[in-house]
Length: 205
Image 1 (cartoon, rainbow, N blue to C red):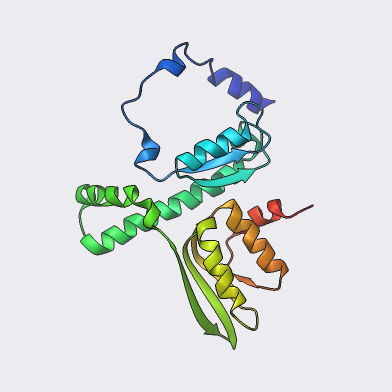
Image 2: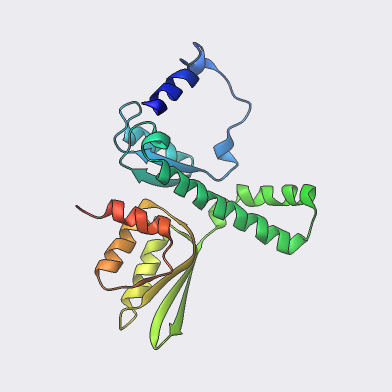
């Protein structure tokens, strides 16, 4: 009840010319984007959300939420923010290690990396630990990289372990892929709490 009062007190109706306003720039065309699709949204259809998110090249998360997911699913929103921050921090650290610049020049150096977000990939490495094959993943675990990972798993006998310690973020297809791997006997090592929680939400009930 208190939250509802705060929302009503701090939010107003949109301006009349909302859909006629022109913007000087579009942030998603030049910066990495993340989008949380609310499956139970009755204000904006989930399919429209997926279309918009895909068009902007966003990393897409989904949750069983109403339109205001920041109120009904705050832990999910925080997880996505943390995942996004991890990726951006990785960009900054990488640039700083290469240029050793001050804050102003570092800001300029990071910008092209943000424009080239599509170049961030998933690195797949096969290692050994305690007599077992471990497939170590580094980077962004997203749908486009899953066929290569699936092939690597299928070609490994006995079943390998997946080390997720260096995975920066995942999308919904990757989460479902991890659920299937786990159910088929593939151990998930160093799986972050936010991925574990997301897997729990995605498992069939």
